[in-house]
Amino acid sequence: MRHLPLNSELFVENRAKLAKLLPPNSLAIVHANDVLPTNADGSLKICPNTDLFYLSGVEQEESILLIYPDAFEPKHREVLFLREPTELLQIWEGKKLTQEAATEASGITTVKWLKDFPQVFRDCMLGADQVFLNRNEHRRAAAVVQTRDDRFLLQCQEQFPLHTYRRLAPLLHQLRAVKSGHEVDLIREAVRITKGGFERLLKFVQPGVTEHQVEAELAHEFISNRGGFAYTPIVASGKNACGLHYIDNDQVCQDGDMLLLDVGSNYANYNADMTRTIPVNGKFTPRQRDVYNAVLRVMRASIEGAVVGKLHRDWQHEAQVMINEELVGLGLLTKEEVAKHTRDQPACKKYFMHGLGHPLGLDVHDVAPVDAPFAPGWVLTVEPGIYLPDEGFAVRLENDILVTENGPVDLMADIPVEADEIEELMAAGK
Image (cartoon, rainbow, N blue to C red; front, side, top):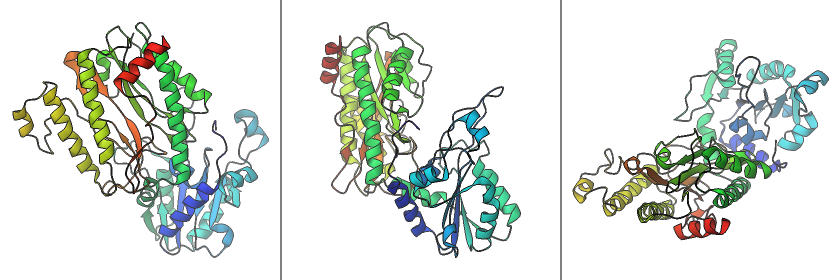
């Protein structure tokens, strides 16, 4: 845990919100993620389960959260189960949460060791009318590996076959889509760290540096500020930028090329997600500047269009229509081709083939009801692009925004994005 301690009130409030959505006499269980193996006796660093963190603030492996608001026994209404920090465990793996520390972090007064879970769980199951179990229900999830939640679901159905089981994910998606003030502050801190990384790069990038050296500069800035990469960074020079998820980051940045940077820091498990495209030598060519400004106009208009009540699919279509017009102006589409545009077959698809943006929060592609209109408290990315492999470059720009009743708030408004500003800062850095 690199980040500073968080106020447990955030997690107390989140559990209270979930308790209000649960039907009477319902029990909910959330598990930590598995520690995944690599090779030999190696393992990956644990990636905290974002639902567990949202409800408890706990990032430790094997943890279990039980929520039973209507339990007859008051101490069973919220129970956190942890690995017992034995002397041997701490010799090999380092410091683990004590019960007192877990209460301070989560606001949960009843903290027990994992060995106590079977009996407490059985007692609660025999009193509950229905049970809400959790799974990863993100629509783009590659659900090919069985998780701790998956194994627990099978165990429950075997041990308690007559219970009624319900899906917890839809309730959590509804809650997590709307960020509280505490959460927005944490996202703002991730944005602040990201800004520092980008400004560092504007002084560093020049012909001859490698993509991985650029990545290393970001790592230094992010980690120095208690953050880390929110996702594997895309540092793509020249034609590499036309591969949407290019992450090799091993090529030399050449004079005259553009460098696409899709990077973001996280802080306290909350994420920023930014894309900038800059000229390696510090100066846009006329063609690069024309494409750049076209994308920038669409990004700014799309930010303004992210209003309360807007459906994501309509927002996406509005951006495609704008991109169509920009492509005509760039000589890439004809008016006749644009006239054939439909939602299913957008005229711009060859040059702009991905989504305009996505919810952002504890996950980079955060959870939210797919059919719900934008609501106050949603945080979204806005990331239009134009990809020109035949010309050897691409431009994508991305800011993070907060949807409010009074219109969208650009959380990255103070991160340089105007072409002139980019050139001036790169020149000053040299």
